Length: 82
Length: 112
Image (cartoon, rainbow over all chains, first blue to last red; front, side):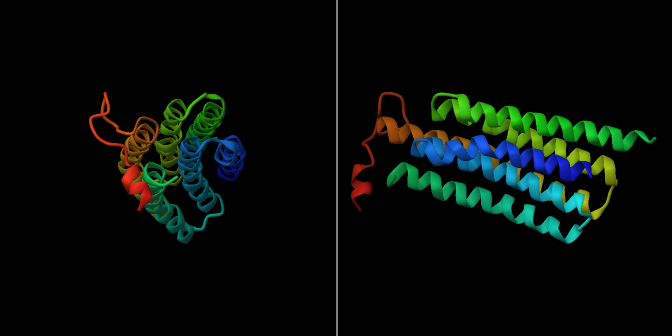
């Protein structure tokens, strides 16, 4: 139960970052995106643990890998085109 | 009452507090450089606390192992991503990441 509560609390923590993501300059938005992605990895792990579904632990692993790749894509776009 | 669930909950509480404080930092700080400093605690320290919490609660199980794998990717990728972001923001603002602007601005690439 505490894992689900922690996941919900972390979801609340995403609101300020989402505000930055939507309303900030492009550089700030990329920072907000990286923050949100990192928190979502933890939320997925917490929910998988909270609901006792070991198979769902593949999602945070996948997102942790994709976080790096997608972050670099956004950073490259920020540097060159945005 | 056993100590492991309590210790696990304490670790989870610390992780949540860290993420909440970092989120406020990302919101309040005035520019992207300073905002980026608050991503690191949420992307590096909080996942360690969450993984420890799962490990303390579950012991050496599949859940702990898979959360360790996710943690590994975050710990490896986080610093590279932060560095690349900082560099991209500087290139965007100054035209070059080196002090004094040793190179040309990527205008030619932008036009492509």
